Amino acid sequence: MAIIWLIMLSASLGLMIFTDPAAAVNSMITGAHGAVELSLNLLALYAFWLGFFSLIERLGLSRGLEKLLRPVISRLFPSSDTETRKFITMNFSANLLGLGNAATPMAISAINRMDTGSPHATTDMIMLTVISATSLQLLPTTVIGMRATAGSANPADFLFPSLVATVLSTAIGIIGVKICSKIFDRPRRNSRRAKADLADNPSTVLPLFPVSPQPKRHKKRERQSKRKRVKGGAV
Image 1 (cartoon, one colour):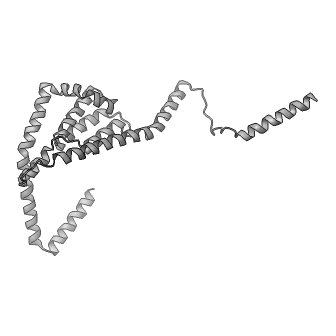
Image 2 (tube, rainbow, N blue to C red):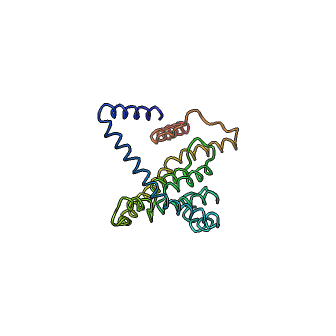
Image 3 (tube, rainbow, N blue to C red):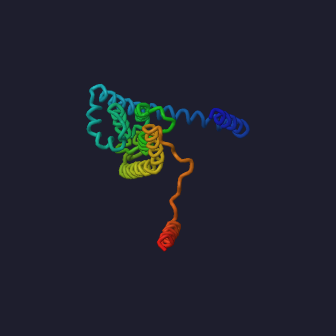
C-alpha cells in the first residue's frame, strides 16, 4: 500500500510541475482551507454527540439500551455475551444518529470480544461488519451538518429517502449474511461433527474410499440368480 501511495504522489507532483504549478498550488490551498473549515464546523456536532454517549456510558444507561435491544441483538448475534452486546448497542445507536466515526471504535471493541482465535471470521463478526457498513440511519446528523455548512436551504429534506435506502440496504445485508451462513457453515459443521465423533470413538476407522450404493438393476440380477440357484438345488 505504501508503494501505491508513493506512485500516486510522485505522478501527481510530476503532472503538477509540467502542467500548471500555480493552479495546482491554488487548488491545494483551497482544498486544505475547505477541509479545515468543514472540520471546525462539524467539531461542535461530534463533541455534543460523543459527550452524550459518554454520559450514557457513565450513567449506566447503556445497560438499559442493551436490555431494550436484547431480543433483536440476540437473534442477530446468538453467540455474543453481555459486554459484547453493550458495544453492539452503542454501535447501533451511533449509526442511527449518523455518527459513523463514533460507531467504528465500538464495532472494533465488539469484534475483538467476538474473536475466538480462529483464522476465519465468525458469522457474528461478518454480521456486525455488514450492519455497520449498511448503517441504518434514522437521523443522519453528519450529512445534515455538512449540508448546512455548504449553505443548503433545507439541510434535512432528504430524511425519508435516506431512511428508505438504509432500511433496505440493512435488510438485504442481514438476509445475505443469513443465507451465506447457512450455505458455507454447513460443511464446517459437518467436519466438526465428524471430528467430534472420531474423538469420542477413536477406534472408528474411516474408509479410504466411500462405498457407493449398488444400482437397483444389479440387485435385481442378484435376486434372479439366487432364485435360479434355489430352484436348481430343489431339482
